[in-house]
Amino acid sequence: MELLRFATAGSVDDGKSTLIGRLLYDTKTIFEDQLESIERTSRDRGDEHTNLALLTDGLRAEREQGITIDVAYRYFATPKRKFIIADTPGHIQYTRNMVTGASTANLALILVDARNGIVEQSRRHSFIASLLRVPHLVVCVNKMDLVDYDEEVFNRIRNEFRQFATKLDVGDLSFIPISALHGDNVVNRSANMPWYEGSSLLHHLEEVHIASDRNLIDVRFPVQYVIRPQHQTNRELHDYRGYAGTVAGGVLKAGDDVVVLPSGLTSRIESIDTADGPVAEAHPPMSVVVRLTDDVDVSRGDMICRPHNQPKVSQDVSAMICWLSPDHSLQARGMYAVKQTTRNVRAQVRELDYRIDVNTLHRDETADSLSLNEIGRVQLRTTQPLFIDEYRRNRVTGSFLLIDEATGATVGAGMML
Image (cartoon, rainbow, N blue to C red; front, top):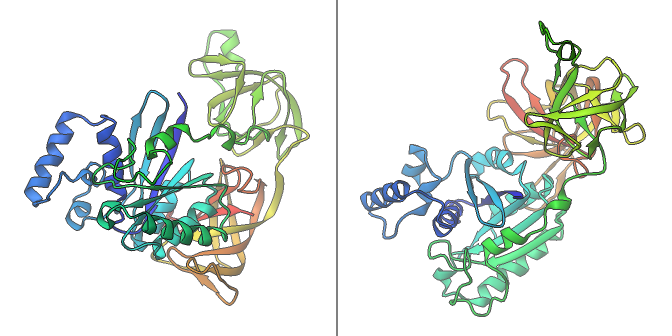
């Protein structure tokens, strides 16, 4: 079955964890002992209802404060599709965790409290989801039960968000009025909102088209490891030379002509192997071993692609950066380690072009640094060439991490322009 990854986003106490708990509960994908545990904990806390948010808020600090701190991943499946959920924090202090959870998502659920409407974190997370090129955005207007399921409240929030979304790069935008606490329009259509003619959230998740979201045109295969068996008595195994990695784009087939970067040497794909045996073709995000007909020099960090469809090879990088470090700010002329696909280089920040105000999307061109959770455009110069695609074209080859060389901590997430 097809796999859909989606992330929740929004402000504190908009009901993200409760919504996921409701999805798991109503699709009957939680165990009886889990349900008994959260029912017992809810009674001990004096909650009026079974607190389904406890299914994802597993840390003690999260339960004590009633907020999500870390990204919690949950899995469930229906007869139509498999799902991986990333429950991300809403507090501004943990925006970097939201970036982590949304970076691999096919779809983002932006939750909005019907009583409060669009707030700063709603805009912040929507902008980040747009920046991360999450293909599908669903705005869930939650807690409709607390506004008497008023259609006017839903319409006002929908119109306000649509106006804000005109400044974003969003390809697919949908709106669903829900009550995560009571299950209205979550798994089944709600009788409390007869004015809403759309589908339930689960039906939308099952039916949204994601097959065309992946780049199946530009062949990109970053080499992670060279497989060369040693001390084998079998001559065929002794002569085996394969290049392991995850397909980042396009479709690889036996017999295809390929070129290896950065050397520029050409060859042809002899076979494609997996843990389950050889396959005729490979596509994202399959992990495979590619064998070539020629003994060319290929090592970790190299990239296999098509001769007439190659990424840009450059040491000058223009990118949007989300700064993740609470201890240090990004400074012009600062040196960092860069990890892009399987390639590791060093880079200097040559210039900070501007910092973005996520509320107004105004560009502050006088900014000289980026602090925790701030986003800006930078120019980098790397010590060795990178194989670059625009992030909008390929989210794998178009992204990278900035790493503090002294501590080894990841301090920034970048998206190529």
